[in-house]
Length: 490
Image (cartoon, rainbow, N blue to C red; front, side, top):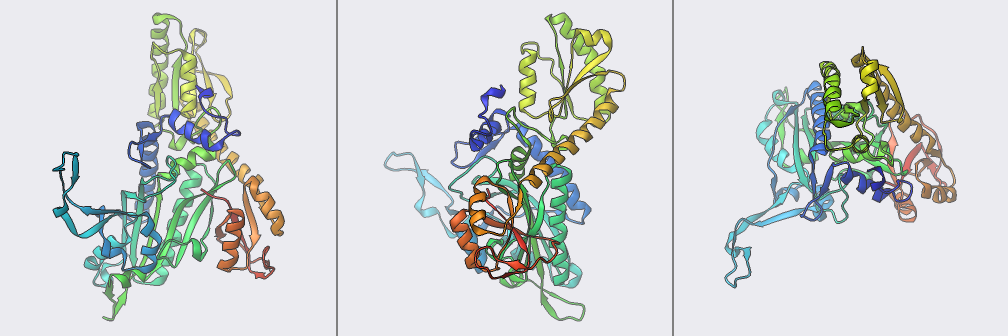
């Protein structure tokens, strides 16, 4: 089965697409640019969703749900917002179909034209702030800390499963605050929640920083992000948190009476991650044999495979492995016994390897006699014979070790592919090989645009917490306060 995917070093894009399909994560839909997330892929999303949801609630947020349809007039109320999303919007113009009088099938009923066209949400700031106007009257109503789990539509022309599709799943937090300081703190808090999740659960090291004005979310005063480096040397924006200032409050006239009775506009944030995180998991860790999943997010953490000849041996080995299964489950480990009798063991090994199950435990007749088990790690392919006695404790610790090792491998890769560059000619040459590049930039959008046009590299972020490092821009020679991170990106 492993041979069914293209070698990663030969064609990274095709390797990725092969892996998504062969690992049973998703497939293209009959609707252009949309995907079907299959049960195994959705199980990963469920773990992501469940974990993040708990993290959000620990920081005081609650879930709500807002409409899929947004009146077109709402988007026009915030100029930068509509400009940023206009080209990606799907528009509903009619509410009914009819049989074509000419016998050509079903057509739109011309008499069913909507009085106002509706936008299928590309993001929900406008519909939510129109709602918040009814919720917020006094400082006592603040803060409002809402999140919603939903789908959105952005009419992408070039799509790729999980990374960029016309419809995708995500969460979007939308909060309202009485002061600028509270909103800024919320923006920082949530980007750090994303960073902790990426590092601790996805085993994916990320940089935290601010976007440049040209790369900010449409309508934001500041956008914070987490940026990860994929194995082909390209960056992936894995999550964003936006300080929206009072832009949306003013656009929708959301004011509150302060403690002294004076009317003030509310301060806002929004933040989100999407099913793009599954694409990040694939590209950050996987190999030419298939998925490599960090144990914390793997739908199955352990697969049990009996190695047998004949139905009698299969029955004996299945019985031998049942107590192992129960012991692992008692420790909260997700485990499956693959006792299919019409599939060869070698095929099972390749199948679960492709799906990235962190640990495989196999048992044959010799193990039955010696009270042992063969334990194989997906991250390193190491195999070891271990006693059946105490296996649950052994596997629990091994899963922690694998999680840590996957993170370390990704971190080592990023560090080995992070470069400090001062020469623009050198930058233009070395960007072809990929990586993160720490370079001085003069802070102007003109220079930023020139670099993007000439190299296809963008400023991924201005690193948070980086000490001042005065220098000169690699392009113009003008003063620069600190280095920023350049990379080509998805």
